[in-house]
Length: 239
Image (cartoon, one colour):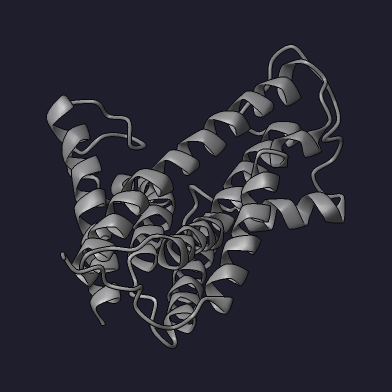
């Protein structure tokens, strides 16, 4: 239950901090401002909640003690977060990544390969590109959780601490640095690829390339966590 509390607390604090910063800065960046418009906050929710939940999940599962069943708990938490994000994507108009991708495969978006000098908000190529970017974000909980679990398993098997608390602190620090850092790196790379797709004629699939190495690392991480020995690392006592 401690990991679930960590996940909830981190999510609430992060979302609250983002909205508070926007409010104090006076920047109406969240789809229409704050003047008595709860719908604006709702439309802005996916943009804030998707990366926040992914990072919060990675931190929460990365700090789980390597005991029996910790991988199952991490998988359950990841499934819950992923289900929540998919429901949010289908329900909130600001997102709709999955329906747009399905429409593209069904051919209802028209010529998504057309190259023009300027793209309107409803251009098929732009719609599909944005949907692929958001679709990648929907995978972020699985990816970041897997990487955090893999690093935690490596720390557990290779590093000796003077006390179990030292190991917990080490996992906390690594998770706090690793999860947001990897997400920021992948998103920046994805945005650069999106620019190439829109204005340089690069094929559409290039926008998903940034997620490929992260997904590979996540698969290794999930496997390492599942195969790790469910016990605390050796405790080194002073002579």
